[in-house]
Length: 384
Image 1 (cartoon, rainbow, N blue to C red):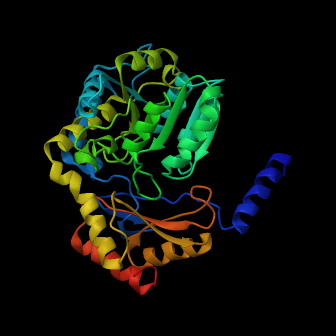
Image 2 (cartoon, rainbow, N blue to C red):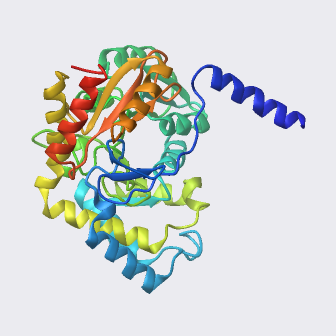
């Protein structure tokens, strides 16, 4: 055994001891809410495909037609030869949907934040982050070289205190938050943060990966009020409610033009497969014509929460916090034995002591699906 193997095994043994080792499990998502593991069919409550559009026949057919027309891959980066005609349609649709001048699609949500944030802030600048932001927002901040300060979750007053202390010493300032927080399912106080950004000459950026398609009438977390919130940088993904893949930034035309020129994760990445682009275009078309579908994931989450005496949900994500990592994984296994796939989430994805079952709801879940999960949770003493 080499020293490299020794190094890896020592790290793995430590993770095993702490109950934090992860393993890949083959999962066959054979239907909108069905998942097959180890030959057993389960009802999945752990998927981010909130509208089940990845299995929608129109979306599948759009991907098939685009693949037949353009091939399986783009063949190069977008600045070389990979900018297929489908990009124009998708970016124009997203910009209109988000009410911005322009849009830019990246290879993934993670690549979007790695590319966008360093274009807007660097050495001598300031980035403000909510402590529960997704990892990719923090990753973008770290590689930017800017000073990064973290404020308590959804605590605008704490963010103001930090800005009062540090803003004057820096050049540009970006305030970055999840629109809908992926592990807790709550929503950022976007209007208050927008006002704070104006007060301190900062730019507000929201990561709406878990908002597009399911909150704000499907438009996302910037559209929860009577008017669109003042968010100049609306980022998100196409891999959750859209049911496809990729990331995007919706912003003004000058900002998008700058990032097209300077966003390294864009410039040096191959373009998305044409079938993926076509699937996203069709999914957005379906979302726009069917607002009732967009409301169903939260309605289904509300049925679950009411039955178990949990707080009224504001998104399709419901955390059932159990605390200890091993207990969460045991609970996840017990639910699987009863026919339900519910993922256990452990540190470092969530803070120490907050390991949880992350229960997610889709438009395709039936009342029987939800009531069955409620009964299993009660039987195991997990909630209610």
